[in-house]
Image 1 (cartoon, rainbow over the protein chains, first blue to last red):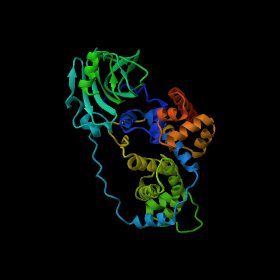
Image 2: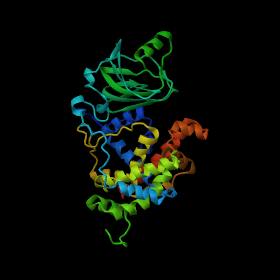
Image 3: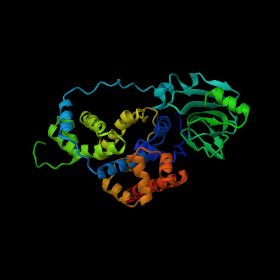
Length: 219
Length: 188
């Protein structure tokens, strides 16, 4: 991200960082959190520290009996060449203008992807395992997304520009965490914004027309 | 490292594997960690057969990647924990786990003094263990369920029959205690 003014000021909740370090984070949310980590040295340090706690806790677990046959089988495989997984792909982050891991799942730069557009809001759905939705959302300058809730948790990572939600400004690198308990209405700042969204379940928009809009977008 | 009375320090064992494919060092490391990793995997719902297969995977990864272990960034136990965690997500949950790339040209660099970064990353295990001793039983429970039973804070709330907010605040307090440990380590 060119010319970042400062490190992010809105971070994933501690519970989410703890789940990430523990490996309990669902895949869709791990994309948002890992991309935030690329932009946030502070959260990288927190995750390293929580992993250290995981290491200490691993060391304190009771030992389970492991048969000598398991050791023998492992030793027999030491001389085999390491399993040839898929060759590591070179990073395309510079070309696409977003850091890894997000750049690994995009086919084109943000500006060239196909977005579905309705009014000032544009959506580009990405692949995600059910029941999660992952998408890029562009909001035109000054436009607000109609008030909506969610059937589950939603994480949003700001990639370009900024928006204001509940009197707080979310700028590049910031993460907004929204629960199903809350209804919100983010409004893009003058220059508009682009964000990455991962949500559990579907967006809930009151009203027939808004509901149709959410279904049309596929979110 | 062939000497039988060499100290069984996991970092030296990893170095011996990295530098000269030392099988004795590998066997020592296996005996040290495989029983813990098995316990971890069983706790995560693996059957004994699955756990025995996964242990081989995890320990082979340790053998193949020993040269990538960086003692400035983590302890051997933490490094092995992350390998076991990632293999478990692959195999038991069949999901991807996205990670950042520390060599990514777009990664925002940590401008904190390198000593500060190292303090966070290269945990002093004694200090982390001390911080963990400070956690209340409730906090230990949520941390244990997250780390060793693959549960999100929402699933933990359901299991313990407490509000989601309560689980989050227990996680938050546990997190703060671990950070307070770091702040003390840095100021001293």
